[in-house]
Image 1 (cartoon, rainbow, N blue to C red):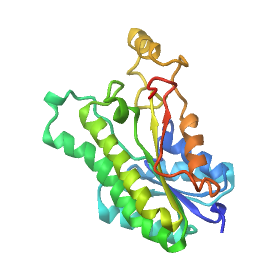
Image 2 (cartoon, rainbow, N blue to C red):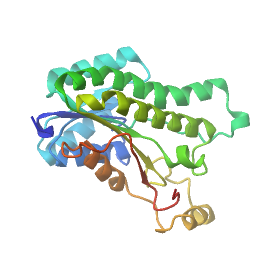
Image 3 (cartoon, rainbow, N blue to C red):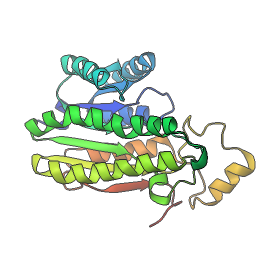
Image 4 (tube, rainbow, N blue to C red):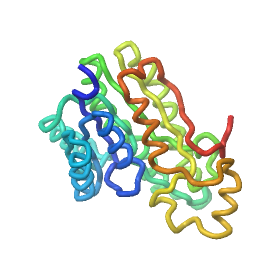
Length: 253
């Protein structure tokens, strides 16, 4: 079986200008069938319809709250009944928080970790056993440059800590599941042109941020999506436990 006989699950893939939706389109263009999971059911279904029309693959959009195990199970039951076996998971669902640490409440902290870390656990834990059974799998985590450089873009301490947790999660999981034909990698985007930054970065502030980006402009969602698609390919079998930076050179290490 090649990856074109399998399904790629993309969490948080509903937003029209988000990395998740761009990734779902790129994976579909590479032959994957697609399951879009999103808190917003209408946007998930819209994304799936758009993907199926453009790429000619099978696609479904399902409502899913990644922080809730029952919601994840219900969503994946729908996916299981509608599409071929899952061969790839892109843990894209996430939320940011720019709140300064001295103002972060315990509730805020837990919410950021619930979506970014527990959410990734819930979906990954549900799908990895099937990948192990079939002897093939690709898992990609959407971390952030904030995890590597300690914030400084849009994410504060809570966000940076949660995205750093994803890096440790991915690396340790890569060691465990490598013998079963599964790779686990992370992508750490920098400043990407999405709704998260839209309207919040203008004038002098935008100029100041871009001054620290050697290529001189914001990244496109496609820049991230194409890399994720590469990591999910059947042929990319000897790359695992790695973190790929997509930041225009704003953080070089």
